[in-house]
Image (cartoon, rainbow, N blue to C red; front, side):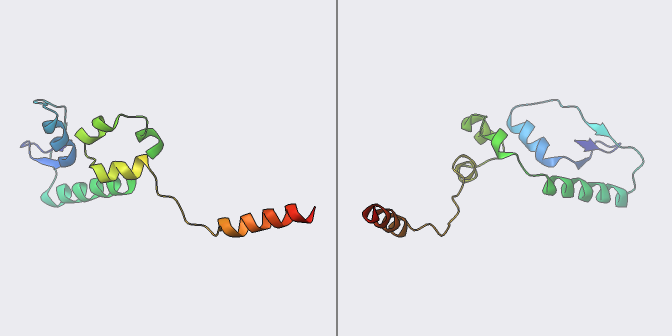
Length: 108
């Protein structure tokens, strides 16, 4: 989290909310001194853009207990997608495959 010289949060609101929800009363912050209001806004926008581009490694998330992830920033629907990834449709047709197998067997 990043604050200015007046302890006003510049970046890290999501982290602050999560830590507050987890019961933290004190946290370490980075203090930026001397930023103009425009620079504070630019820092905030750049920080949010980095987070937006980040993403999650779902393979690593699947190694964490669901209850732990629910306490954090994930909701049930998001976790359902992580723990049961959607299957992709393909052109496989079971009936066609079965017919080709039985046809090959009867030709022998």
